Length: 211
Image (tube, rainbow, N blue to C red; front, side, top):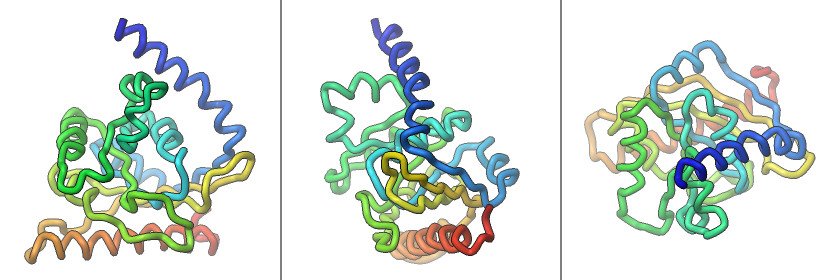
């Protein structure tokens, strides 16, 4: 029965996606496609700003050939009508109100040890593009623990029906997550730097530096 559910979930995932791309048009831009795709041959932690609630669905499919898994809030993951789909597709649950709970970290590390990459939204909630909130450093803890490469992305607007959205996939970055200092302060510093890099991708897109 589980095999049937898994097959059905994958069929729905593949069948519905072309229609979603029509009603939610998206243009993909690479800062350096060759370099980034090379990085994806190994496991990566992919992160971006968080403008709306359908980003995870798009990223899992858009980056599917790179075996990218996406986190979904536990409150959504456990909804009766959606749970069977999430369980049989490349999604992981995260308790956004779990405080010090690290179960999500263990789940992600297990997937990455098997060669997968993880997409995560460091803001933890949606925010307007021009009011990007601080990045919580959990994604950096995951990168440090797994030895993964970091890949930044920028989404230029909330994904809306029949409104084109631009997605910029940046070059991989390699912050020194093992530098000396108080771990919480080191991670906070690099999280701020990562947010700045995401913002810079948006600036480059507007200035025509990324096509």
